[in-house]
Image 1 (cartoon, rainbow, N blue to C red):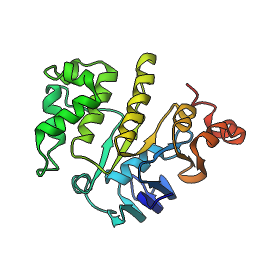
Image 2: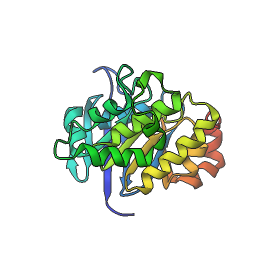
Image 3: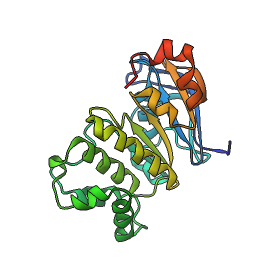
Image 4: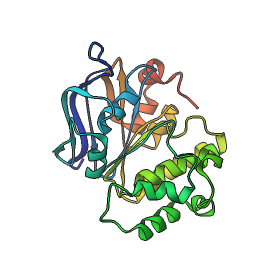
Length: 241
């Protein structure tokens, strides 16, 4: 495995001072990998992504992006350093057209030209080109998710965090969303994903981590974790889809 693009070392984090949600989580994501984090409800999966992007304060431990310690930086600075984030909910500006949503995504990188970045996103998400003048609030659930991902990709992040990219989508959009994740990865973007459809996500991932009660429980190659009877029995039973 090549050197890590994104890693945490014994990360402790939580929303309030008295309660730790993450209790020493250590993960590593190498260049060009898809890594999926799974586990039961309350394991700390989404909190991990929020701590990486700076939305949840780290109490101790380290977060590094391409070797740079980004622990404690505000989200805007972390995005400028090259980490993208797609939250599960409220991830588009509903009252703005698709293209204006994408333009907002480029704000952290004033050194990049808008035209080429729009062209790149429309090539990756042709449906957004067809909808480029529509209000984001009028898009379907799958189209909104595409827009949220495209907006996060506008500033050319080194790595992308995806929080439950298939949550709430119609079945026909679930397959499309997993295809999009694979396409984004093939384009050269490293991906760390939290996903409710755990078995499917692990099967397409290079590696995976299982969290339980805010701690590392298992880690290994994604397909091997998906097939592991013990992991499936303890952690994946409620996540098949």
